[in-house]
Length: 82
Image 1 (cartoon, rainbow, N blue to C red):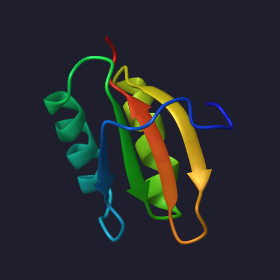
Image 2: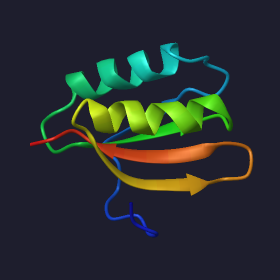
Image 3: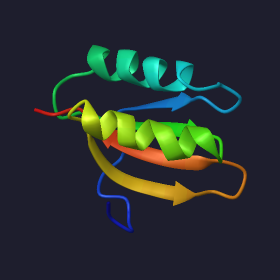
Image 4: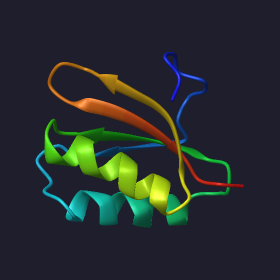
């Protein structure tokens, strides 16, 4: 993970208020629709969502580039592998 945004996201997905594991499934479905190498910004709630979704995506082969605490939510930048 980096401390600064490395690129502008190709798309955004607001999953605030979405429980686990639905937020992971929706993120994965969105990434699968995107072009290889595309960057997705996902907004997640604190707690279980931000603890589980990044790890689950990494295990599936996606690249977590950035995670930022935006006070009310977390902004996760995840890249679909090329």
